[in-house]
Amino acid sequence: MRACALLKTHSIMKLFCLAVLITACFFSCKSPDAKSPSRIEKRDEILKNIIPPKISENRKVLTDFGAKGDSLTNNKPAFDRVLKACKEQNGCRLIVPPGIYLINGPIHLVDNTCLELKKGAKLVFSTNSKDYLPLVPTSWEGTLIYNYSPLIYAYQVKNVAIIGEGIIDGNGKNGFSKWYDLQKPAQQLTRKMNHDGMPVKERLFGEGHYLRPQLIQFFECKNILIEGVTIANSPFWSVHFLKSENITARKVKFDAFNKNNDGFDPEYSKNILIEDIDFNNADDNVAIKAGRDHEGRKTAMSSENIIIRNCRFKGLHGVVIGSEMSAGVQNVFVENCGYGGYCKRGIYLKSNADRGGFIKNIYVNDVEFGDVEDGVFITSFYHGEGKGFETDIRDIFIENLKFKSASHAGLVIQGYPTKKVSNVNFTNVRIDSCVNGISFTNAEHIMFNNVVIGREMEVPTAVK
Image 1 (tube, rainbow, N blue to C red):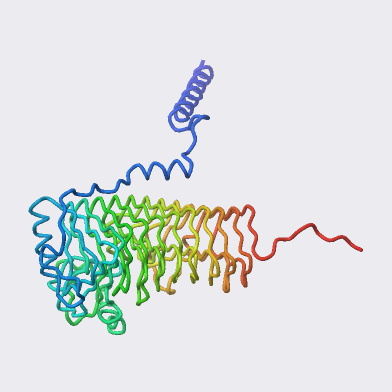
Image 2: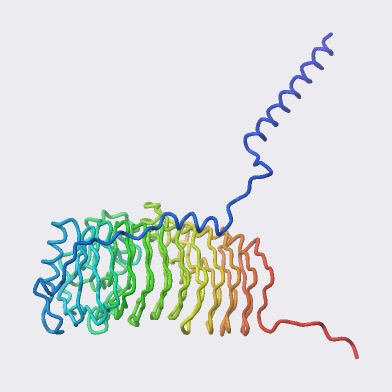
């Protein structure tokens, strides 16, 4: 009887375990018909959330407020007057007629405002640093601080646009760019404040610190359009999207050759379309960032849902992620882009073990470069610095990518010993001429499909 009871209990337990297993499968296993969305489906879902702001029909002409495009008159007061009127009337379309407009100080944009530069209009900013005081909330190389105002500054505004065929000249070569060799002490101080967690309101820079302001910055803004204008001679980064969302940038031209003259720098920002851009920068064309080190990890606001398409790259690097990306970068699509000239590197993902964070779900499709130093460079050892906060770099999908030549290296992956770069897919990649084809360290699950570096081999010759 005891044996029968034990046998019965054992059978019941087996049936119970089987029932649990079936139930777990029912709730956790995917249906055979279910499938993950394709790259195109993911991209198109993002595009649904990117809608340019509506332009106000309330038209104001800058010269009606005392401005003169004679390259001599200070037009800062005229801009202040017209923008005050725009704010009181809940927005406007501010039209700048042809002419050269000197501005001794920053332009601070307000809600529902479109700055339209007509063909032949040129804004030229002063070189006197005192014109850009008082200090404003901003950031510098991934650390939030108070500093000189960016030359065109939008802070906590919505529905704002900069459009037209005119030129925005930061006059950096004759002004702030001369500070590059003086910035090191303040640069190091920002990093110490970041690592120490000092309250942002106590991070006061400005006079005596030599940190150059950005040319254009949108900080905590929603619904942004920048279209058609030429951006030249920036003192520092050219266009900085900081903690902002729903951004459209198209048909912009860059002519920026000073130190650190990146084109677009999205940081802690999302839902961004960058298309049909002619880059010509002394630094990165697009550099996607997400805060630096301790502050970035604490903020935990990833840069995401970014589409870069139909652009022409020329400058230092084409598309860059990092190195300040401690809150993470994900869902980046680079599509149908070509080149307008030389780039040092084509696709460049850079981090180090001070950063942490992640870089994932990066898609590069149908992109062509000419002559470069390095084709694709993915590194966890940027500047050889850092410890304790390795970056998770994974799920990179590169398809239909071509280079004429790579004078240094074709494909480079440098993972970290304790955090390898993982799941990188190369499909239909061709480098016609290359010194060093492949260099992979601390990398795993790297997949190749139709990759040719150098001359493609044909039918093997037979023994004669």
